Length: 247
Length: 247
Image (cartoon, rainbow over all chains, first blue to last red; front, top):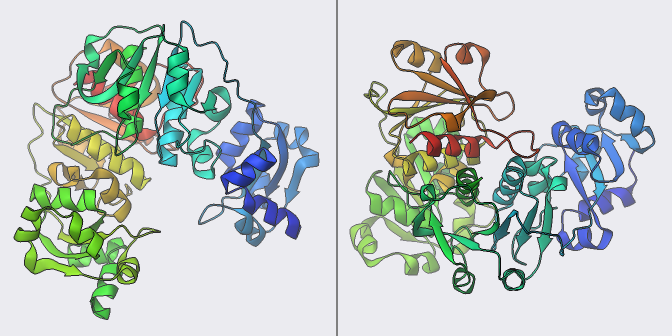
Protein backbone atom coordinates (compact mmCIF):
# COMPACT_ATOMS: atom_id res chain seq x y z
CA UNK A 1 0.00 0.00 0.00
CA UNK A 2 1.09 3.50 -0.78
CA UNK A 3 -0.87 6.60 0.16
CA UNK A 4 -2.17 9.11 -2.36
CA UNK A 5 -0.02 11.78 -0.74
CA UNK A 6 3.10 9.68 -1.21
CA UNK A 7 2.25 8.95 -4.83
CA UNK A 8 1.89 12.68 -5.43
CA UNK A 9 5.14 13.41 -3.59
CA UNK A 10 7.16 10.86 -5.57
CA UNK A 11 5.65 11.96 -8.87
CA UNK A 12 6.61 15.53 -8.04
CA UNK A 13 10.25 14.44 -7.73
CA UNK A 14 10.38 14.02 -11.49
CA UNK A 15 10.66 17.82 -11.53
CA UNK A 16 13.76 19.68 -10.46
CA UNK A 17 11.74 22.29 -8.60
CA UNK A 18 10.38 19.69 -6.17
CA UNK A 19 13.66 17.80 -5.88
CA UNK A 20 15.21 21.09 -4.82
CA UNK A 21 12.37 21.94 -2.43
CA UNK A 22 12.46 18.53 -0.72
CA UNK A 23 16.18 17.97 -1.12
CA UNK A 24 15.40 14.43 -2.28
CA UNK A 25 15.47 12.36 -5.48
CA UNK A 26 14.61 8.79 -6.46
CA UNK A 27 16.30 5.88 -8.18
CA UNK A 28 14.72 2.88 -9.90
CA UNK A 29 15.60 -0.69 -10.81
CA UNK A 30 17.23 -3.32 -8.66
CA UNK A 31 20.78 -2.69 -9.88
CA UNK A 32 20.87 1.06 -9.25
CA UNK A 33 18.85 0.95 -6.01
CA UNK A 34 20.88 -1.89 -4.52
CA UNK A 35 24.14 -0.18 -5.46
CA UNK A 36 23.02 3.14 -3.94
CA UNK A 37 21.84 1.42 -0.77
CA UNK A 38 25.04 -0.60 -0.38
CA UNK A 39 27.27 2.39 -1.00
CA UNK A 40 25.78 4.27 1.98
CA UNK A 41 26.42 7.58 0.30
CA UNK A 42 22.88 8.89 0.29
CA UNK A 43 20.52 8.61 3.23
CA UNK A 44 17.54 6.51 2.20
CA UNK A 45 14.10 7.91 2.98
CA UNK A 46 11.89 5.07 1.73
CA UNK A 47 11.92 2.00 -0.50
CA UNK A 48 8.93 0.88 -2.57
CA UNK A 49 9.10 -2.52 -4.23
CA UNK A 50 6.91 -5.24 -5.62
CA UNK A 51 7.21 -8.78 -4.26
CA UNK A 52 9.52 -9.50 -7.17
CA UNK A 53 11.75 -6.58 -6.24
CA UNK A 54 11.79 -7.61 -2.60
CA UNK A 55 13.03 -11.08 -3.53
CA UNK A 56 15.92 -9.56 -5.44
CA UNK A 57 17.19 -7.46 -2.52
CA UNK A 58 20.18 -8.84 -0.63
CA UNK A 59 19.62 -10.02 2.96
CA UNK A 60 21.93 -7.35 4.35
CA UNK A 61 19.88 -4.64 2.73
CA UNK A 62 16.57 -6.15 3.86
CA UNK A 63 17.91 -6.24 7.43
CA UNK A 64 19.39 -2.75 7.39
CA UNK A 65 16.39 -1.07 5.80
CA UNK A 66 13.53 -3.21 7.08
CA UNK A 67 11.63 -0.22 8.52
CA UNK A 68 11.86 1.67 5.23
CA UNK A 69 10.69 -1.06 2.86
CA UNK A 70 7.12 -0.90 1.55
CA UNK A 71 5.87 -3.77 -0.55
CA UNK A 72 3.39 -2.50 -3.12
CA UNK A 73 1.47 -3.75 -6.15
CA UNK A 74 2.75 -3.53 -9.74
CA UNK A 75 0.14 -0.92 -10.66
CA UNK A 76 1.12 1.20 -7.67
CA UNK A 77 4.79 1.09 -8.63
CA UNK A 78 3.89 2.07 -12.18
CA UNK A 79 2.15 5.16 -10.81
CA UNK A 80 5.27 6.46 -9.09
CA UNK A 81 7.75 5.31 -11.75
CA UNK A 82 9.38 7.60 -14.33
CA UNK A 83 9.98 4.58 -16.57
CA UNK A 84 7.63 3.46 -19.33
CA UNK A 85 7.64 0.06 -17.66
CA UNK A 86 8.36 0.23 -13.93
CA UNK A 87 11.21 -1.99 -12.81
CA UNK A 88 10.24 -3.73 -9.51
CA UNK A 89 11.80 -1.20 -7.10
CA UNK A 90 12.07 2.54 -6.45
CA UNK A 91 13.87 4.23 -3.59
CA UNK A 92 13.91 7.80 -2.37
CA UNK A 93 17.15 9.32 -1.13
CA UNK A 94 18.27 12.59 0.34
CA UNK A 95 20.53 14.64 -1.90
CA UNK A 96 24.09 15.08 -0.81
CA UNK A 97 25.55 18.37 0.25
CA UNK A 98 28.06 19.49 -2.37
CA UNK A 99 31.04 21.50 -1.42
CA UNK A 100 31.73 24.27 -3.91
CA UNK A 101 34.93 25.27 -2.15
CA UNK A 102 36.44 21.80 -2.55
CA UNK A 103 40.21 21.63 -3.04
CA UNK A 104 41.05 21.06 -6.70
CA UNK A 105 44.80 21.64 -6.55
CA UNK A 106 46.89 18.79 -8.00
CA UNK A 107 43.80 17.18 -9.44
CA UNK A 108 41.98 16.92 -12.72
CA UNK A 109 38.56 18.57 -12.60
CA UNK A 110 35.82 18.37 -15.21
CA UNK A 111 33.88 21.43 -16.29
CA UNK A 112 30.62 20.94 -18.20
CA UNK A 113 29.31 23.84 -20.23
CA UNK A 114 25.59 23.17 -20.78
CA UNK A 115 25.57 19.38 -21.26
CA UNK A 116 21.83 18.98 -21.81
CA UNK A 117 21.19 15.33 -22.50
CA UNK A 118 20.61 13.50 -19.19
CA UNK A 119 22.08 10.29 -20.66
CA UNK A 120 25.27 12.11 -21.60
CA UNK A 121 25.54 13.69 -18.15
CA UNK A 122 25.02 10.31 -16.48
CA UNK A 123 27.67 8.70 -18.66
CA UNK A 124 30.11 11.52 -17.94
CA UNK A 125 29.64 11.22 -14.17
CA UNK A 126 30.12 7.44 -14.31
CA UNK A 127 33.23 7.80 -16.51
CA UNK A 128 34.63 10.50 -14.23
CA UNK A 129 34.20 8.14 -11.26
CA UNK A 130 35.93 5.33 -13.20
CA UNK A 131 38.94 7.56 -13.76
CA UNK A 132 39.04 8.89 -10.21
CA UNK A 133 37.87 12.45 -10.95
CA UNK A 134 36.60 13.95 -7.70
CA UNK A 135 34.87 17.14 -8.83
CA UNK A 136 32.68 18.24 -11.73
CA UNK A 137 31.68 21.88 -12.16
CA UNK A 138 28.45 22.26 -14.15
CA UNK A 139 27.09 25.41 -15.73
CA UNK A 140 23.59 26.43 -14.64
CA UNK A 141 22.06 25.05 -17.84
CA UNK A 142 23.63 21.63 -17.54
CA UNK A 143 21.03 18.89 -16.93
CA UNK A 144 20.21 18.24 -13.26
CA UNK A 145 22.27 15.34 -11.94
CA UNK A 146 19.35 14.19 -9.75
CA UNK A 147 16.88 13.85 -12.63
CA UNK A 148 15.61 10.25 -12.96
CA UNK A 149 17.39 9.64 -16.28
CA UNK A 150 20.74 10.84 -14.97
CA UNK A 151 20.44 8.80 -11.78
CA UNK A 152 19.63 5.76 -13.94
CA UNK A 153 22.76 6.09 -16.04
CA UNK A 154 25.25 7.08 -13.32
CA UNK A 155 24.67 4.17 -10.97
CA UNK A 156 26.20 4.90 -7.58
CA UNK A 157 28.87 7.10 -9.11
CA UNK A 158 26.49 9.96 -8.44
CA UNK A 159 27.49 9.96 -4.79
CA UNK A 160 31.21 9.53 -5.26
CA UNK A 161 31.77 12.58 -7.43
CA UNK A 162 31.31 16.07 -6.06
CA UNK A 163 28.99 17.79 -8.54
CA UNK A 164 28.81 21.56 -8.20
CA UNK A 165 26.39 23.75 -10.19
CA UNK A 166 27.02 27.42 -10.76
CA UNK A 167 28.75 30.03 -12.84
CA UNK A 168 31.65 28.10 -14.39
CA UNK A 169 33.24 31.28 -15.71
CA UNK A 170 33.69 32.46 -12.15
CA UNK A 171 34.99 29.10 -11.02
CA UNK A 172 37.64 29.20 -13.74
CA UNK A 173 38.52 32.81 -12.93
CA UNK A 174 38.87 31.99 -9.25
CA UNK A 175 41.41 29.32 -10.16
CA UNK A 176 43.47 31.28 -12.65
CA UNK A 177 46.67 29.46 -11.73
CA UNK A 178 45.20 26.09 -12.81
CA UNK A 179 45.60 25.24 -16.50
CA UNK A 180 42.42 24.96 -18.55
CA UNK A 181 41.96 22.53 -21.45
CA UNK A 182 39.03 23.11 -23.81
CA UNK A 183 37.78 20.13 -25.85
CA UNK A 184 37.14 21.55 -29.32
CA UNK A 185 37.22 20.45 -32.95
CA UNK A 186 40.53 21.27 -34.63
CA UNK A 187 42.62 21.71 -31.49
CA UNK A 188 45.91 20.05 -30.54
CA UNK A 189 45.86 16.24 -30.81
CA UNK A 190 45.23 14.79 -27.34
CA UNK A 191 47.77 12.03 -28.10
CA UNK A 192 50.59 14.56 -27.96
CA UNK A 193 49.88 15.13 -24.27
CA UNK A 194 51.30 12.95 -21.55
CA UNK A 195 49.77 12.45 -18.14
CA UNK A 196 48.19 15.66 -16.86
CA UNK A 197 48.24 15.91 -13.08
CA UNK A 198 46.34 19.13 -12.56
CA UNK A 199 43.88 21.04 -14.69
CA UNK A 200 40.35 21.77 -15.79
CA UNK A 201 39.00 19.78 -18.73
CA UNK A 202 36.11 21.68 -20.29
CA UNK A 203 33.45 19.80 -22.30
CA UNK A 204 30.87 21.78 -24.24
CA UNK A 205 27.22 21.54 -25.19
CA UNK A 206 26.19 18.71 -27.55
CA UNK A 207 25.40 20.97 -30.48
CA UNK A 208 26.98 24.34 -29.72
CA UNK A 209 30.22 23.21 -28.11
CA UNK A 210 31.89 25.40 -25.47
CA UNK A 211 30.77 29.04 -25.21
CA UNK A 212 33.25 31.42 -26.78
CA UNK A 213 33.96 33.32 -23.56
CA UNK A 214 34.88 30.05 -21.85
CA UNK A 215 37.07 28.82 -24.74
CA UNK A 216 38.90 32.14 -24.61
CA UNK A 217 39.79 31.50 -20.97
CA UNK A 218 41.43 28.16 -21.81
CA UNK A 219 45.18 28.07 -22.45
CA UNK A 220 44.97 24.76 -24.33
CA UNK A 221 42.55 23.64 -27.05
CA UNK A 222 42.53 19.86 -27.29
CA UNK A 223 41.01 17.46 -29.82
CA UNK A 224 40.62 13.80 -30.65
CA UNK A 225 42.07 13.11 -34.07
CA UNK A 226 39.56 11.88 -36.61
CA UNK A 227 40.53 8.94 -38.83
CA UNK A 228 37.15 8.39 -40.49
CA UNK A 229 34.32 10.64 -41.51
CA UNK A 230 31.87 11.27 -38.65
CA UNK A 231 31.18 14.96 -38.18
CA UNK A 232 31.63 14.84 -34.42
CA UNK A 233 31.79 12.57 -31.40
CA UNK A 234 29.12 12.23 -28.71
CA UNK A 235 29.99 14.53 -25.77
CA UNK A 236 30.20 11.63 -23.30
CA UNK A 237 32.47 9.67 -25.62
CA UNK A 238 34.74 12.65 -26.25
CA UNK A 239 35.03 13.27 -22.51
CA UNK A 240 35.88 9.61 -21.87
CA UNK A 241 38.58 9.44 -24.53
CA UNK A 242 40.19 12.65 -23.26
CA UNK A 243 40.25 11.42 -19.67
CA UNK A 244 41.72 8.07 -20.77
CA UNK A 245 44.38 9.88 -22.77
CA UNK A 246 45.62 12.20 -20.02
CA UNK A 247 45.16 10.15 -16.85
CA UNK B 1 -1.16 18.20 -46.13
CA UNK B 2 -0.41 14.59 -45.40
CA UNK B 3 -2.82 11.75 -46.18
CA UNK B 4 -4.14 9.39 -43.52
CA UNK B 5 -2.49 6.50 -45.33
CA UNK B 6 0.89 8.21 -45.18
CA UNK B 7 0.46 9.00 -41.48
CA UNK B 8 -0.26 5.34 -40.85
CA UNK B 9 2.68 4.25 -43.00
CA UNK B 10 5.18 6.52 -41.22
CA UNK B 11 3.88 5.59 -37.79
CA UNK B 12 4.33 1.93 -38.70
CA UNK B 13 8.04 2.60 -39.36
CA UNK B 14 8.56 2.97 -35.63
CA UNK B 15 8.40 -0.83 -35.61
CA UNK B 16 11.17 -3.03 -36.96
CA UNK B 17 8.69 -5.38 -38.63
CA UNK B 18 7.38 -2.63 -40.92
CA UNK B 19 10.81 -1.11 -41.52
CA UNK B 20 11.87 -4.56 -42.75
CA UNK B 21 8.75 -5.04 -44.83
CA UNK B 22 9.05 -1.65 -46.56
CA UNK B 23 12.84 -1.53 -46.50
CA UNK B 24 12.59 2.07 -45.29
CA UNK B 25 13.21 4.10 -42.13
CA UNK B 26 12.85 7.72 -41.06
CA UNK B 27 15.03 10.41 -39.53
CA UNK B 28 13.99 13.57 -37.67
CA UNK B 29 15.36 17.00 -36.86
CA UNK B 30 17.06 19.44 -39.17
CA UNK B 31 20.62 18.41 -38.31
CA UNK B 32 20.22 14.67 -38.94
CA UNK B 33 17.92 15.03 -41.96
CA UNK B 34 20.11 17.63 -43.64
CA UNK B 35 23.24 15.55 -43.02
CA UNK B 36 21.60 12.40 -44.42
CA UNK B 37 20.31 14.27 -47.48
CA UNK B 38 23.68 15.90 -48.18
CA UNK B 39 25.60 12.66 -47.77
CA UNK B 40 23.61 11.00 -50.60
CA UNK B 41 24.03 7.63 -48.97
CA UNK B 42 20.37 6.72 -48.60
CA UNK B 43 17.79 7.31 -51.29
CA UNK B 44 15.17 9.74 -49.98
CA UNK B 45 11.54 8.75 -50.42
CA UNK B 46 9.83 11.80 -48.96
CA UNK B 47 10.42 14.83 -46.76
CA UNK B 48 7.81 16.28 -44.41
CA UNK B 49 8.52 19.61 -42.79
CA UNK B 50 6.80 22.56 -41.20
CA UNK B 51 7.37 26.05 -42.60
CA UNK B 52 10.01 26.47 -39.92
CA UNK B 53 11.82 23.30 -41.06
CA UNK B 54 11.62 24.38 -44.70
CA UNK B 55 13.32 27.67 -43.88
CA UNK B 56 16.20 25.81 -42.28
CA UNK B 57 16.93 23.59 -45.31
CA UNK B 58 19.85 24.65 -47.47
CA UNK B 59 19.11 25.92 -51.00
CA UNK B 60 20.93 23.00 -52.61
CA UNK B 61 18.74 20.54 -50.76
CA UNK B 62 15.55 22.42 -51.57
CA UNK B 63 16.52 22.38 -55.26
CA UNK B 64 17.58 18.74 -55.35
CA UNK B 65 14.57 17.40 -53.47
CA UNK B 66 11.87 19.89 -54.47
CA UNK B 67 9.52 17.15 -55.73
CA UNK B 68 9.82 15.22 -52.46
CA UNK B 69 9.23 18.05 -50.00
CA UNK B 70 5.81 18.29 -48.35
CA UNK B 71 5.12 21.26 -46.13
CA UNK B 72 2.76 20.27 -43.32
CA UNK B 73 1.30 21.71 -40.13
CA UNK B 74 2.88 21.31 -36.70
CA UNK B 75 0.09 19.02 -35.51
CA UNK B 76 0.53 16.80 -38.57
CA UNK B 77 4.26 16.49 -37.98
CA UNK B 78 3.58 15.60 -34.36
CA UNK B 79 1.39 12.73 -35.52
CA UNK B 80 4.17 11.09 -37.54
CA UNK B 81 7.01 11.92 -35.14
CA UNK B 82 8.61 9.45 -32.73
CA UNK B 83 9.77 12.34 -30.56
CA UNK B 84 7.85 13.71 -27.59
CA UNK B 85 8.09 17.09 -29.27
CA UNK B 86 8.40 16.89 -33.05
CA UNK B 87 11.36 18.78 -34.44
CA UNK B 88 10.29 20.66 -37.65
CA UNK B 89 11.31 17.96 -40.18
CA UNK B 90 11.08 14.23 -40.85
CA UNK B 91 12.39 12.37 -43.89
CA UNK B 92 11.89 8.82 -45.08
CA UNK B 93 14.79 6.95 -46.61
CA UNK B 94 15.38 3.58 -48.19
CA UNK B 95 17.59 1.27 -46.17
CA UNK B 96 20.97 0.43 -47.60
CA UNK B 97 21.94 -3.01 -48.79
CA UNK B 98 24.53 -4.42 -46.39
CA UNK B 99 27.17 -6.75 -47.64
CA UNK B 100 27.78 -9.61 -45.22
CA UNK B 101 30.66 -10.95 -47.28
CA UNK B 102 32.58 -7.67 -47.03
CA UNK B 103 36.37 -7.93 -46.91
CA UNK B 104 37.61 -7.51 -43.36
CA UNK B 105 41.25 -8.49 -43.86
CA UNK B 106 43.78 -5.95 -42.63
CA UNK B 107 41.04 -3.99 -40.91
CA UNK B 108 39.59 -3.53 -37.47
CA UNK B 109 36.00 -4.78 -37.25
CA UNK B 110 33.56 -4.27 -34.39
CA UNK B 111 31.41 -7.13 -33.11
CA UNK B 112 28.42 -6.25 -30.90
CA UNK B 113 26.99 -9.01 -28.72
CA UNK B 114 23.45 -7.91 -27.85
CA UNK B 115 23.90 -4.16 -27.37
CA UNK B 116 20.32 -3.32 -26.46
CA UNK B 117 20.17 0.35 -25.74
CA UNK B 118 19.47 2.28 -28.98
CA UNK B 119 21.43 5.27 -27.68
CA UNK B 120 24.47 3.10 -27.05
CA UNK B 121 24.24 1.51 -30.49
CA UNK B 122 23.94 4.94 -32.13
CA UNK B 123 26.96 6.22 -30.22
CA UNK B 124 28.99 3.15 -31.15
CA UNK B 125 28.18 3.52 -34.87
CA UNK B 126 29.11 7.21 -34.79
CA UNK B 127 32.35 6.51 -32.90
CA UNK B 128 33.22 3.66 -35.30
CA UNK B 129 32.77 6.07 -38.21
CA UNK B 130 34.98 8.66 -36.46
CA UNK B 131 37.76 6.09 -36.18
CA UNK B 132 37.36 4.78 -39.73
CA UNK B 133 35.86 1.38 -38.84
CA UNK B 134 34.13 0.05 -41.98
CA UNK B 135 32.16 -2.93 -40.66
CA UNK B 136 30.14 -3.78 -37.54
CA UNK B 137 28.79 -7.28 -37.02
CA UNK B 138 25.74 -7.29 -34.73
CA UNK B 139 24.18 -10.29 -33.00
CA UNK B 140 20.50 -10.89 -33.76
CA UNK B 141 19.45 -9.38 -30.42
CA UNK B 142 21.37 -6.15 -30.87
CA UNK B 143 19.05 -3.13 -31.25
CA UNK B 144 17.97 -2.37 -34.83
CA UNK B 145 20.21 0.30 -36.35
CA UNK B 146 17.26 1.78 -38.25
CA UNK B 147 15.12 2.39 -35.16
CA UNK B 148 14.31 6.11 -34.70
CA UNK B 149 16.47 6.47 -31.58
CA UNK B 150 19.51 4.91 -33.20
CA UNK B 151 19.15 7.01 -36.35
CA UNK B 152 18.90 10.10 -34.13
CA UNK B 153 22.16 9.38 -32.35
CA UNK B 154 24.27 8.14 -35.29
CA UNK B 155 23.78 11.12 -37.57
CA UNK B 156 24.88 10.27 -41.11
CA UNK B 157 27.42 7.74 -39.84
CA UNK B 158 24.66 5.19 -40.27
CA UNK B 159 25.29 5.08 -44.00
CA UNK B 160 29.06 5.08 -43.89
CA UNK B 161 29.49 1.97 -41.76
CA UNK B 162 28.51 -1.44 -43.09
CA UNK B 163 26.25 -2.89 -40.37
CA UNK B 164 25.59 -6.62 -40.69
CA UNK B 165 23.14 -8.51 -38.46
CA UNK B 166 23.38 -12.25 -37.93
CA UNK B 167 25.02 -15.05 -36.01
CA UNK B 168 28.25 -13.47 -34.75
CA UNK B 169 29.58 -16.82 -33.59
CA UNK B 170 29.56 -18.03 -37.17
CA UNK B 171 31.12 -14.81 -38.43
CA UNK B 172 33.99 -15.23 -35.97
CA UNK B 173 34.37 -18.91 -36.86
CA UNK B 174 34.45 -18.15 -40.56
CA UNK B 175 37.35 -15.76 -39.90
CA UNK B 176 39.41 -17.96 -37.62
CA UNK B 177 42.70 -16.52 -38.84
CA UNK B 178 41.73 -13.01 -37.64
CA UNK B 179 42.57 -12.23 -34.02
CA UNK B 180 39.68 -11.61 -31.67
CA UNK B 181 39.76 -9.14 -28.74
CA UNK B 182 37.03 -9.42 -26.11
CA UNK B 183 36.33 -6.32 -23.99
CA UNK B 184 35.87 -7.67 -20.46
CA UNK B 185 36.42 -6.62 -16.84
CA UNK B 186 39.76 -7.82 -15.49
CA UNK B 187 41.49 -8.47 -18.83
CA UNK B 188 44.84 -7.20 -20.09
CA UNK B 189 45.26 -3.42 -19.83
CA UNK B 190 44.46 -1.87 -23.23
CA UNK B 191 47.34 0.58 -22.72
CA UNK B 192 49.84 -2.26 -23.13
CA UNK B 193 48.73 -2.73 -26.75
CA UNK B 194 50.13 -0.70 -29.60
CA UNK B 195 48.32 -0.01 -32.85
CA UNK B 196 46.28 -3.03 -33.96
CA UNK B 197 45.92 -3.24 -37.74
CA UNK B 198 43.63 -6.22 -38.04
CA UNK B 199 41.18 -7.86 -35.66
CA UNK B 200 37.72 -8.20 -34.22
CA UNK B 201 36.89 -6.07 -31.18
CA UNK B 202 33.96 -7.64 -29.34
CA UNK B 203 31.74 -5.48 -27.10
CA UNK B 204 29.15 -7.17 -24.89
CA UNK B 205 25.66 -6.51 -23.62
CA UNK B 206 25.19 -3.60 -21.18
CA UNK B 207 24.42 -5.77 -18.17
CA UNK B 208 25.55 -9.30 -19.06
CA UNK B 209 28.72 -8.52 -20.98
CA UNK B 210 29.86 -10.88 -23.77
CA UNK B 211 28.29 -14.38 -23.89
CA UNK B 212 30.64 -17.03 -22.55
CA UNK B 213 30.83 -18.98 -25.81
CA UNK B 214 31.94 -15.83 -27.62
CA UNK B 215 34.52 -14.86 -24.97
CA UNK B 216 35.94 -18.39 -25.26
CA UNK B 217 36.56 -17.83 -28.97
CA UNK B 218 38.63 -14.69 -28.31
CA UNK B 219 42.40 -15.04 -28.02
CA UNK B 220 42.77 -11.74 -26.15
CA UNK B 221 40.77 -10.37 -23.23
CA UNK B 222 41.19 -6.60 -23.01
CA UNK B 223 40.22 -4.07 -20.36
CA UNK B 224 40.35 -0.39 -19.50
CA UNK B 225 42.18 0.11 -16.25
CA UNK B 226 40.09 1.61 -13.48
CA UNK B 227 41.59 4.41 -11.38
CA UNK B 228 38.47 5.33 -9.40
CA UNK B 229 35.50 3.43 -8.10
CA UNK B 230 32.73 3.10 -10.72
CA UNK B 231 31.57 -0.48 -11.10
CA UNK B 232 31.68 -0.40 -14.88
CA UNK B 233 31.81 1.86 -17.90
CA UNK B 234 28.96 2.50 -20.32
CA UNK B 235 29.27 0.13 -23.33
CA UNK B 236 29.57 2.99 -25.82
CA UNK B 237 32.26 4.67 -23.73
CA UNK B 238 34.24 1.44 -23.32
CA UNK B 239 34.09 0.81 -27.05
CA UNK B 240 35.28 4.36 -27.82
CA UNK B 241 38.23 4.21 -25.42
CA UNK B 242 39.33 0.84 -26.82
CA UNK B 243 39.20 2.08 -30.40
CA UNK B 244 41.12 5.22 -29.46
CA UNK B 245 43.77 3.12 -27.72
CA UNK B 246 44.44 0.70 -30.59
CA UNK B 247 43.91 2.83 -33.71
